[in-house]
Length: 139
Image 1: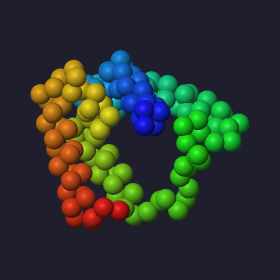
Image 2: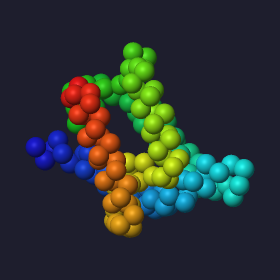
Image 3: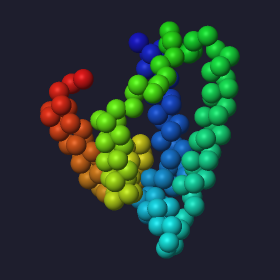
Image 4: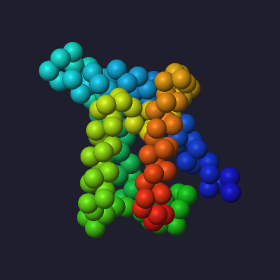
C-alpha cells in the first residue's frame, strides 16, 4: 500500500513546493500574467517553461522504458479523449483561473501560505466538484 501511495504523495509535495517557490500561490501573479496590456508579469511563463523542460526530458526517458516504475503500463491520452465534456470543462477551468487567479494545485498549496483566502477558493472548488458528480453521476 505504501509503495502505491508514496509516488503520488512525493509528487504532490514537490509540485506544491514548486508552485509556492515560483510564487504561483499568489493570485496576483496569475492575473498579472493574463494582463498583457497592463502591468504584465512574466513569472508564470517562466514556471511553465521550466515545466516544459522537465516534461520534455520525461518524454525522452519514457520512450526507453517498457513500463512505468510504479505501474504495469503507461496510461497516455489519445485523440479519442477529446470530448465536448473535456473541452467545456477546460473552458470553465480557464475562466475560473482567470477570475480567481488560482487553480486546484496552487489553491491547495496556498492553504499553507494564506489559509483564509485559499480556503474560500478550495471550498468553492469542492462544491463545484460535488455538483458535477451529483448532476452527472459517477463516471
